[in-house]
Image (tube, rainbow, N blue to C red; front, side, top):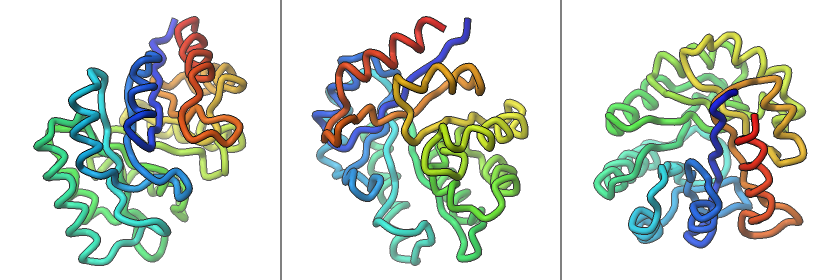
Length: 226
């Protein structure tokens, strides 16, 4: 039996509380679902930290669009990590690329240094990299503990072959966490094929604004029975 765990992407305090109440193992807190998540407001993070006893990871993404940032945007990312770290969060989620689609090792390492000793996840900026296997090695070298990816496809199911290759190449040096359309209807296949510890889902169905309680419960049940 594997010890599978569930991270829920939450876009406001209400969804974070719902994830907590429905046995998520970890919350990835951000805002603005329509653009895939941005850095949350500090007041939301403070409230979430007060009310949640499960792990709370914070998205550090200053704007929508690509993952190549200006000097001012990079300064804002550093400032946000310092502020959220003081609140007592459990980890961070970010990813910075170069213009050529490679991993910006210098800037990512600087953020990881600021975040220490908290773990950092390289988010789905990975799916925009031009060479995923080189990106994998660069991300490991930076010191990230996890890569959140759909295997460079719109959904984890579509990218399952790449996900399998990444898990094999990673060889337990970093966690590969599938995300993107992960739901109760396909979690069995992902667990069987990948056997990785964490699975990432927004658990949103029918275009709802919050994680669907029934969907979270179904995913959680399937994770616990494997």
